Image (cartoon, rainbow, N blue to C red; front, side, top):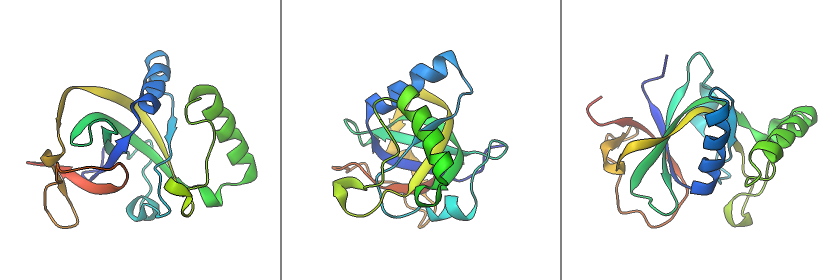
Length: 165
């Protein structure tokens, strides 16, 4: 059962998402990976990690259209990349290199090289929305304010609920 609160990520490269869609078209339940650029960990996901049994919805805008939710998925896992065992890191890098060549590997540097990239999200059921919608339809759970559609740069995330839910 999906948790009530969702996560919004602002501006993922469309090419990254299309690679995931290609795999999940052939293997619909295959788990795939996202690595948001940031040296801040996703504290709520760290405190209460999503699972296959209790996933959290993910809303995604793309870098070329930051004001519109174009994709959604289910997050079924969160890990701090700094704490991965060497065996797990090696296996995950093989999977990512084979199935997500645009990602290449598990990377450690955050955007701009300032700090570490710490979050590794495991996702499933990525879908491109038939009817994309404005980010203003999402309300931040931290302050009950809708997200702003005045977005000029990629990066960052917010914990949200969809308006009216």
